[in-house]
Length: 291
DNA sequence: AAACTTAGCAACCGCATCTCA
DNA sequence: GTGAGATGCGGTTGCTAAGTT
Image (tube, rainbow, N blue to C red):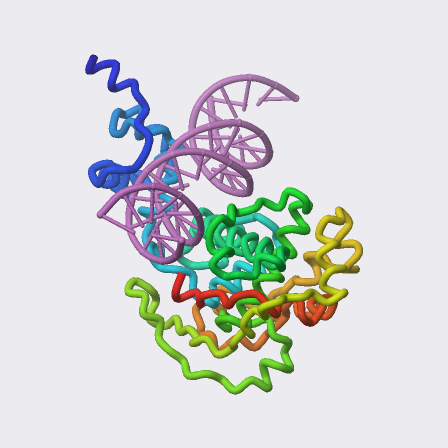
């Protein structure tokens, strides 16, 4: 029985003792030879599992338990637009974040967005109470992934930039014109104290009782089912969002305060294609500090 | 207070790529 | 050149805490 147990591969949550063993292994041999941990009988975990645990939780200097700051959010959004779902690559621009962190962050964000989309697409259910429940998170089944992803970014950025000023996405001129709100230190306990977030300073108009989409909005929503949606919109591709080193240094940017957002190289121009009342009825999103 | 929903996170799985004998 | 094992990556799942009804 004992021998049988030793053959078993343990799965599920890691115990503190297991973490200690893993840490000791890394101290001795470095972050490699993961499979030898099991073959030596140190842990009943696969090499893959050990590596994942180390990379995602035990590695030094991880920002565990710290929510994404507005700046980190911006970096993820920008780099996702440029690289696509290359989470590991994106994570290299975010000190202390893992690909898993980025992936989870993006996934949550997309779900939120999908809900907003669904809500906004059904004007008849403008009752907020109805909207909050019953809304199974829709997957973008009718919209090809790339389009859904792209649209996802943009939709929410528009909403969040108004709702919580998470970082950017008003056009540069507007940003320059905007009186800066008072800065508040993030109150998240484990976070980098240097990270500063804005208090919300935009207000989204409350939903109208009888919401009516403009003809432009109807046309736009109809396009969501069009597999060639992106083509319809014109030359919108990742390259357009490219930030390029001269304009943007994600590493330093994410370590600086939100005040330093001065390179609004964003998909703003794309919004020119959107009907102006497209987002009028969207409820404000909570600021990132409230997630 | 209980039931239900949602968001966030940790971990697993399968596939791709790399390394090395 | 090739095959096996190790490693890396992205997608997905399942659990839990918090919020809502």
